Amino acid sequence: MSDNKVQIFDTTLRDGEQVPGCKLNTEQKLVIAERLDLLGVDIIEAGFPVSSPGDFKSVNEIAKIVKNASVCGLTRAVENDIKVAAEALKIAKRPRIHTGIGTSESHIKYKFNSTQEKVIERGVAAVKYAKSFIEDIEFFAEDAGRTDNEFLARVCEAVIKAGATVLNIPDTTGYCLPEEYGAKIKYLKENVKGIHNVVISCHCHNDLGLATANSIAGVMNGARQIECTINGIGERAGNTALEEVVMIMKQHPYLNINTDIDAKLLYDTSLMVSESMGMMVQPNKAIVGANAFAHSSGIHQDGVIKNRETYEIIDPAEVGVTESAIVLTARSGRAALAYRAKKIGYELTKLQLDVVYKDFLSYADRKKEIGDQDIHEMMKSNDLVAV
Ligand code: KIV
Ligand code: ZN
Image 1 (cartoon, rainbow, N blue to C red):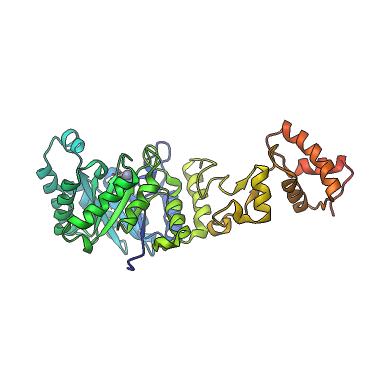
Image 2: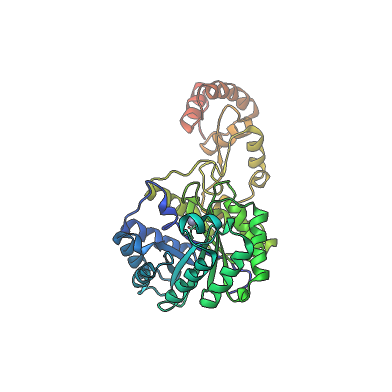
């Protein structure tokens, strides 16, 4: 793998599906898994096999159909979880077990009533046991974001020795600032023996709206895998949004990092996930929201009509959106009205435009948005016909 490639680990079907009310059946998961494979993700986290017979079945069926990506199953650092995951993944072309344990003070004290040494022992034992079934073992240090760096480095070193191939450093509670998360990755790179032989992974939650920024900070400090979901769905405020990190890397070529994602499929994939989960995408969502390429104020519309790049840093076609939208509201100017009128067949002189624009403003003050039918009516009342 090239040093500049960042692997995309999609967890829409595991962390994403943990969203209340977003449960998918096996058929729906298979359709999404196929799409993720086509999109070019490197790893599909298909589920948590021990959690229910349904999840076992889904992971197993996904393992059968995925052609290119690795298929991964989550486990706790518990032998039975690992055995069940290995069974579910047996048929996968590229199976991966994702096992781990909480490493922060609060997890050790309150979740496990244990000690740091015992947590290391459990992590090591889990990796060794998983390794007896499958070669590719990812270890997660849950709540790494709030774990002391020195202890985290000891955990990482021990699990690498036990055979881990990927180290996941989750900011489970979305607590870290980008600088802090980036510094954590840097610290591990500089202080863990054997770290250069494994891939460091960022798994950031969005409780403070920093999941994407933290993942990018991680990558800029040496991580080479990002764990993310379509539309950023996931526990509480969600996970890092796949479409955001992919487009950040594309839009900033000087970062010199890239992915294998086919960005043209991003918008359709977002729709597919949103529809099958019944989870609406907020209109102002970056990259895939309904307003991501819509312009409604007169100043912006005038700029975009003259040259799209005045107010757009991404060509909508790059992410599979047909075109930028000029939304007509009471804030729109003559340029936008003329543009939209021309699209539906009206070539207006300056004088005609002045007259129609007056009508337009009074329509727009009454309605939130002016549609094509409204324009036809305005034209008709001014005896103007389409050419
Ligand atoms: O957020 C988290 O820590 C997780 C782990 C199970 C990887 O989802
Ligand atoms: Zn998570």
